[in-house]
Image (cartoon, rainbow, N blue to C red; front, side, top):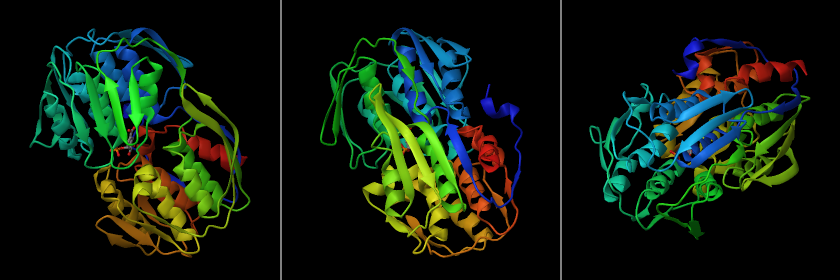
Length: 436
Ligand code: S3P
């Protein structure tokens, strides 16, 4: 059952905010939650995962794992997963449903490719338009028998088979594709190597190590030894930095604001966001930084700031890819604006985020120049009251709710309920900060 099914597609009316104040703790990081759940499911023994993401995407991963015969208990403060070992999954009776989640489909495909049974995995209308050829190619090189609609799109039909190790150079930076290959590498006899053009989030590598896999990194090449014995773990997922990003951004642009977010994941492959914001002139401070299960965790304090503007290009684009929609909003309110290049990947996210960001900025009365691989938002702009749309994309819903906080009048966000894909509590937490 899709977690979002009980939340009707709802609109939200967002008025300008006078100030935002408060202390927050956020549900677990979406990327890390997917990885912990999948690895727990192929480990030996019972894993307990605290602060698991509440978003629909991570619930899709759990439902797929259940359909593969994995026992999962949802306790009030943890998800308990009874691992069945690398060979213990059973053939699903129906098509696996990845919902809106690209991570679920791409990473699970890596694990399904090495099973002794056939499976089929599908997604919603948005996921059905997203490219899967990027995983088909390396998986087929490993010997996988995998088919996609028009050789490119979901659903995927996978006939599990014996996999061989490969050395693969990623043509586009993608942590999902890297992870898919590393997870398939668990089933290959020998060492599988992936080389990435620029570093992407390394949660899979860290989590694999925690569960006992042998994994090595030298430069931009990651190698995994196949057929390890993975052992169940007791884990706590750090708060989601990509969810925190919306409240950090809001605190920076709403007058008289101070927001403290505790226990957030600060993995260096994700926290380029904080350096970038500080570079824009943001008053952001880190406190209580420590390491847990190989991941950095800490508190982030953000206050109202004068923002200068900035440029996102090259490797930085990959490091900030999920935060670009909300950074575009900040760009329009900054002194010099925001330039984004090398971001063609934005066009194949939950929506074409270059198009949906530009459309909403224009509805707010802001100017934006669009390129094939990015956009330029001039600075020193004002937002008017407007009817905005999530276009069914969670990050667009939340980015433009942040914009509405700084608009001259009330804005409507159509299909704001899309936020529940990664952050069902978003609007409630925002209310708390407005009342704080
Ligand atoms: C993710 C990787 C990124 C990111 C997505 C989550 C992950 O996608 O946009 O939200 O958890 O590995 P790509 O790998 O397609 O760049």
